[in-house]
Length: 109
Image (cartoon, rainbow, N blue to C red):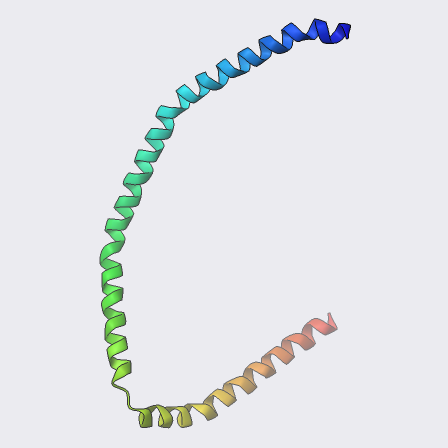
């Protein structure tokens, strides 16, 4: 109890000091935060302006690709699938061989 009584004024002084320091820090940081926010907004706007032409070009390319995909006949897709299927099987077999060789190498190590 005696220690509590002795420390009570010190604790109160620290509370007052911390509150004042927090307010001072807040006041000092607000202009910095506003400056950072303004610069970030400016940079984001510049980035948006730089990227807009690329985005528009990409949109146009996608529209063209979609239009071309719409014009493909189902018979053409079937023929393409028949042509590609054997090639895909070959690729799958080669990749399987590669993974088996890699696995064998690491199993020996």
